[in-house]
Image (tube, rainbow, N blue to C red; front, side):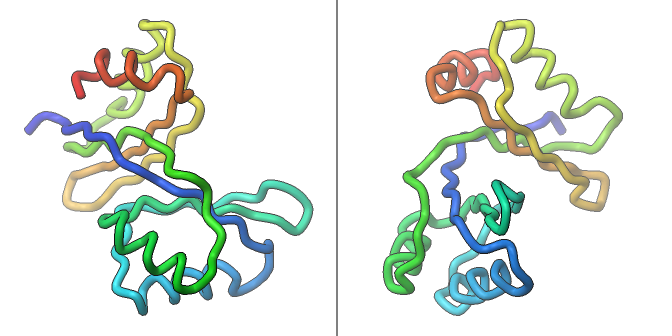
Length: 137
């Protein structure tokens, strides 16, 4: 089975870098029935962090965030790659983008079990259309 690549929308949510801050926000989304395709968290400065969230349903996510008065960024777009896990799976997609002169801003990948992997690849907004064409999306 070949890899599949799709466009996904994601949002960044600022939070204090302290125990339980991410769990609290994720519990709000969970209680609202929001399912996530992916998330990753990272520090952005002293005492500050972000979590980037890919909701399965952006409308439900936006409603939950608004109801809970949580701050999130504007919608951003990335590529979700899913496929059979193998050596170099992500490297091959990054090489395709690099050969086209497209810089990858960030990438996250994980083995999903049962021989599968998933990756999120972010490029600069100005390069998104070109990247989509190169990746066949």
